[in-house]
Length: 450
Ligand code: NDP
Image 1 (tube, rainbow, N blue to C red):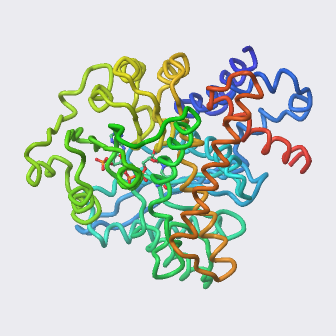
Image 2: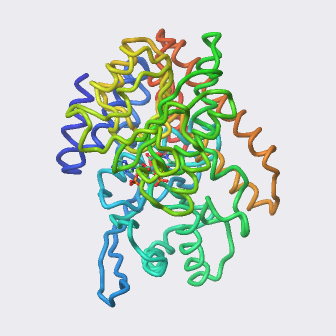
């Protein structure tokens, strides 16, 4: 345990005030103990010290002009964390809460997630503290162009390939790609999550949500159970949440909730997917407007949430899919879920459960799919988009979906067999972290001290 403590203390000095990053590092190091204790080579090669330090961190000013003619300034980031397994790969997040610590936690998680997919991709992440809410289309475009005016020199189809994340969808990717093309003259696969009109892959939009449900399906199948007929809680109402809900319906389950930053929607009859898509994908409206079409649903505003957590997790259900953001599921929420009989949690978001909440799930020995395994379908399908771009091919929806299912199955098997190898078969946190770590660490050793 002392090396965990020593590592965190060192990070607090060299990278101050990055709470989410320390949290992510602590969780990974905690589960790596069995492998670090028995393998001197990782100590000899200072693998942990090298892994927690990004290969490169780019921070830059993003000036842009708003519709009133006033100059606004945001802060942009790209953290190129680890390229042992391939070009840096990971999304861009545009949200007012973005800071260096959040981008570093996401980038650090991405290293292990990408390794778990078995595909040749390294780990990176980026974004800006820009709030897209309430901005006009022209403002979004000018911001994206300014962001790329700096970032373009650091990215490329074989060096660093960004994608979307919170606040970044096909529209933003389009504006960023356009500016990259203008500055470099290159029409190449430098972004994933592109529009289907110009190089995007079928299933990329759906992949994170679908993959997260496939992961739950594989966890349940191992217990002789299935999704059919199960009542499900979903948080978030963005890309990941919407396609989690879509796949849950396809596989016979009943999602009854979703949420956004204004509150939680509970519809006992089942969330109406068409209304949700219309609200969030077309009109970009608040979730409470759902009630106009479905007065039998209930909206719980954030002001009515319990002091120690999130209303969505207090509703009885058998399955839970956190798909909004980090630390959205507290220890008290986890206790409520377990007390209400939840049998599986599959994380669509990155690090949505606090460390204490994860302990509650592991102690209760329910099926728990940590984000870096359960939500890896998004980045895996991004890599399939890169493969299609590089070979100038276009695969069908069924072909990509089939590959996604196989990748999710392999991720599940890799995490579960590694967990069993280390004597904790139910602990997919340990299994996912060790399985991902071994690939990256061994590649780093083989590539020398770089
Ligand atoms: P979107 O921007 O499409 O949606 C995010 C959703 O979460 C919105 O409903 C948003 O509500 C809600 N949300 C965001 N921040 C907060 C907050 N601080 N409090 C409450 N609600 C919040 O993002 P995605 O669906 O793409 O991403 C969701 C999660 O999935 C993130 O953790 C992301 O890192 C992770 N992820 C995404 C992948 C992808 O392919 N897109 C891949 C792997 C992981 P509101 O609109 O009101 O802000």
